Image 1 (cartoon, each protein chain N blue to C red):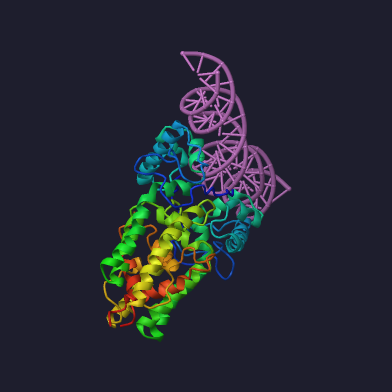
Image 2 (cartoon, rainbow over the protein chains, first blue to last red):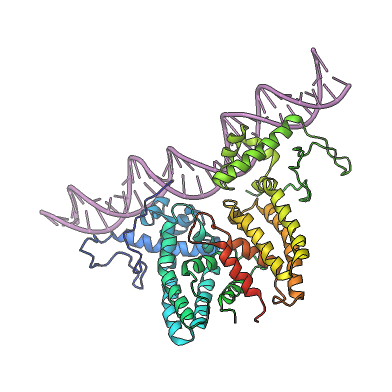
Length: 216
Length: 216
DNA sequence: GTATCTTACGGAACACGGTTCCGGTTTCTC
DNA sequence: GAGAAACCGGAACCGTGTTCCGTAAGATAC
């Protein structure tokens, strides 16, 4: 039931880079990177593509067998490359999460802190609601998703904290708000935002942000 | 995979009443209530108690077999009395949901509309966060939980709408807010509010409510 | 180019939880 | 007390996540 989270790649730099190689290149990390076999690299890339496609149609909780079938590989191959589903999800969405994280400072530099915060939160919400089931899984406390929580939080909470601090320093929002709590709340509000036409997460998140402003 | 939701009891009056009988009494519904056998009534009551106990310790998504074991009955007995897990959950919490629903008009009569709304939402939040996993299951879109959604929404959305209308009429909040959306949002914010000391759903819900006030 | 060794693969097998089936038992009615 | 109907328990079934193991593919040495 419990799995040790293999954290070989320390959740820092991509793993699904523009050159298509995942671990194919000579890293400078102590020379302990034995360069994977060619078919392994090929399969990892194929799996990422297949997973991305299946996630779009069936959500991030699609059966492992479906992803394997789509990629034309056996199920064990998935587990070999991505010991937990969290790691697969992270690998698929890493680009977009990184982009979101990097947008924070950029927004802060280009407008007022409160507007920057609002726009950045909107970016995050847009990302979440377009990923079928991702918000729900982000909230899940099942073992195996720890790495997913950790990645999202590690990457985004500091950015959010930066924006919050700036807005608080500018006197636009109440101080003392916790970035972690805000991110969780926003994430929660995005759960089920697809597949329910009567529920608009963006509207509620706007209310939440509005509620953070100083009374007048 | 899919189950037809048996809706014999139209989600109106208890089923777990103060006399302990569930369907043991002569109802006035066309004389079509054949009075269940004694062991059936006994088991239903036992199951409700067992489920309530297991829900407290293991959450509302506890394995069916655990509940059956605790009640000392076979699993099929659960399915006979509660064809879907939703119906079991509804039966267990019906009293509290009813109490919450009835508190709405009472609050409205005793204070200002906005205060009443705030206090009522707090009641709802308190209810949800103390029921391990209930908020999450309330949001789940798995087949079989339809009856649970329907019950909560049917029972609570009208109450919430009443409070919203009153507050809007008093000019205390922006008008046009949808009660359904608000309930869903509040429910979502309660997901995972247990088991995470850094996340306080009440605080976020307060922000949300604050964001609904008219700008000044 | 071939032999050998290592790495990775695929699918069967296992575990676990929800759901259904069926032979047997309890309760009700007369 | 006897027969009929309702109800029960647990085994069986099914879908999904996870692991195992015999085999194939790639890398390396010659």
